Length: 299
Image (cartoon, rainbow, N blue to C red; front, side, top):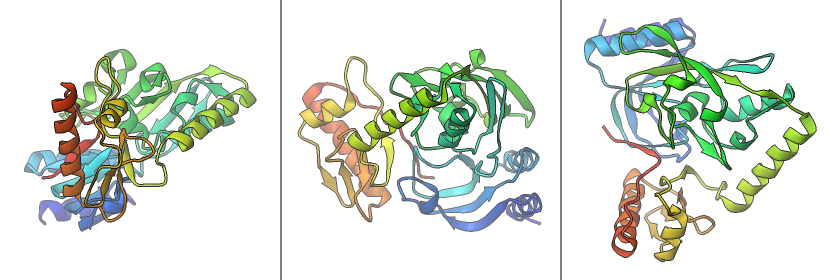
């Protein structure tokens, strides 16, 4: 049995989904993506550990994917491992424990249902819990680091371990998980008692602000660039006359210039070319080097 066949067998026996030569476009919010050799969505932590072990011991390249909301992916020669099936959510007192593949929005809804406050600013952020912790996602003055207590993860040696928030090195759009080959499997949130009506009002307010200001009607990876020190990426891009700039099916949103959107039929190369054009123009006109917030995968 070859290594890929072993991965397929393990994943399917766990009740997960696994397929060879899988097209990735529907697994990303940008709706762009070519094929990977194997796509595996294990059903549980044990199966995930086994698949990682096969990849590591056999030298197979792998990429761990949450909901694909911050990933621009072309093709991947190896195994794309999805955490989507690790999606259980459980509230207990002031804490919520969620699998890495759970939608962050679903965790926020669970907090609301249990009158727990602290996650209102995170409501509406697309993507999974694991992905949000990986990049310390945040919006409207709040970040994951404000509410995360601990997580479970698989280390480089295949051991399941726990880590406190203090050990995660959470910073602006960064964490220890971006530096080390750790795979998050679940996250514990520590919240506060709140009043359900007030929590819902705040969540509704922020969601409406998103609808009003962001191009949610188009596929995108959210904010394309990190916030440069002392600047706002969207303002720089607009001041450089790039709002509406289009290459192929990729466009700088007319609604919010911090977003590069898939206007329709955009290819991976269209988005990459537009991103590089934006960076070049902003560098030349403003002297500021923009850094991508989205992860670009092409292997």
